[in-house]
Amino acid sequence: MTLQHAQQGLRNYKVQIENIKTLFVECSEGIPDLPLEERGVVLQCFTWILERAYRHMQMRTLGGRGWYLAEEGETYPRQLVGSFHGQDRTVPPRVFLYRGFAATTVQVHRGPCLKVDLSVRMIQGQTALAKLTFFRDLLISKHRDNSLPAPTKEEVDSHLQMQMVGRTCMTKHNHIHYRISRVCIDMDPNSTFPFEEGEISYAEYFQRRHGITLRSRQPLLHCPFRGKQELYLPAELAFLTGLDDDWKAEREFAQELWNGLRHDPAEHWRMQTRLTGGLATAEEGAALREWGVTVAQEPLRVRCG
Image 1 (cartoon, rainbow, N blue to C red):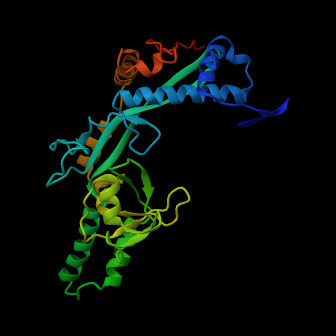
Image 2: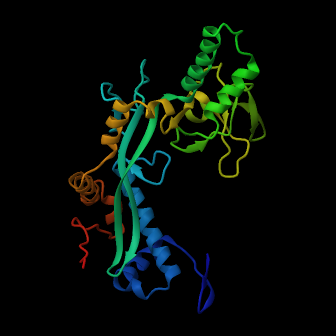
Image 3: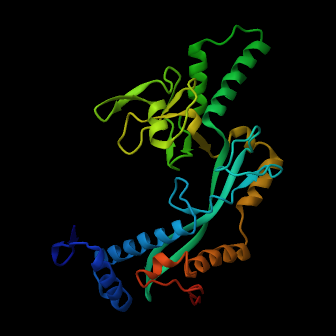
């Protein structure tokens, strides 16, 4: 790799695993003297190692940059219990809240510092397919109540685009977030796309690659992602994020959800201690000790005033 240095011009670096350990030694004894671009490489190496430890702690990214306790989801409203990763429910909760950490490695005067803040990921309890069915049935009901003819295919399509385009969703099988560009009611899992040396249907692809059997009658979601313009997702695999507008208007639900999103100082410290304590255990912290890295159990104290 090459880095542009302000005084010394273009500098070449060869990054090898065995050299990272040496870099860590230099880091702990003299990182303030390294050029800024080299300091960034050191911090990125710390980030990679810490991410291995997070995986050992059974945390997941859930489509974002934070790491979340995915097996400890809280349901809202609270009268329902369950997990986004468990079995499907007949009456799913509106949202799951997953608590976790936004942990980044930063440079301070004393050296590398693990900066930890709490983060919450909110995922709806129903699939995008269930939401599409709800919006379609609601439109049909409105037409019937107003003694209007059943909505045409074009009217249904327009209504679904209005409700879904621009919203974000997360797929359960890989925890990646996508933005919905269009609901494709003329496509279904039997539609095909180029794959390897030929064509494959979405149903066959997800069965072969992920072991998922798809329902045959459902639309696909057009979700361009990282330069892949022709990326389509079966609606039953996607879960919307955020809140529906009518939910925000329900005062009791909104207040209960807001209380779940708030963290007082004591809760902050309890959760941060859970992370740093886990990184110090024999099993979950093994990834750190392979590289001679330890995380202090006490926070860095900063003098104010």
